[in-house]
Image (cartoon, rainbow, N blue to C red; front, top):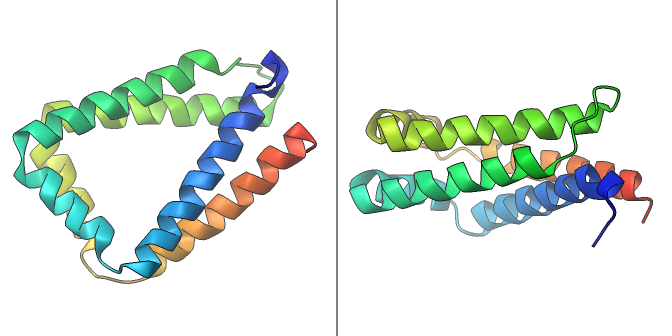
Length: 134
């Protein structure tokens, strides 16, 4: 557990681990993300649950991250937390449309999204470790 000044670094590190693991998972099982979105889109209960979890995670990140206008990482994490809140609200209010858009983005089966996830994940891990000086 870190101090208040390390919270942005820890959130960034965990974002990076998430991005790396998700990208590797998509490489191991191509089409996994597209299938997941299709399954969520087909179930009102899963749409509601996904929206609530997404909204909650975004709110926790937004509220827990100490905003510092002079710190680029703090600003970035606050913006990401806010976007995750908006994404959760969009899933709750317009799940069919929003998930349809996500499904179209992932339906090509291209490994581009997995590669992008891995690259962003590695960059976030590096930025988090740099901030934490681990």
